[in-house]
Length: 85
Image (cartoon, rainbow, N blue to C red; front, side, top):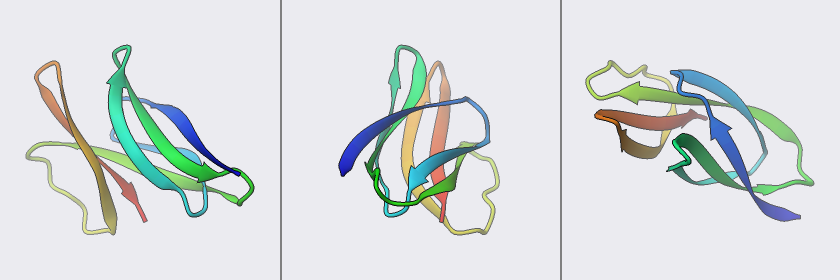
């Protein structure tokens, strides 16, 4: 069964979240002053641990395979979110 799932993110440079294989990240936005990720999941598929990384403008980026999700400006800072494939 396909569902849209909401996951609150911590404001840290790297965190792992559980998503089913074949997931699709839909968006990250601020909701009630917290970063929230929405993803489309098949809850009948196996779950995998997905690293979410966040960088500020000007930080060096690693060379690993990163997939861009979203850039958000909040309280004078700019956050760039990716997940590792």
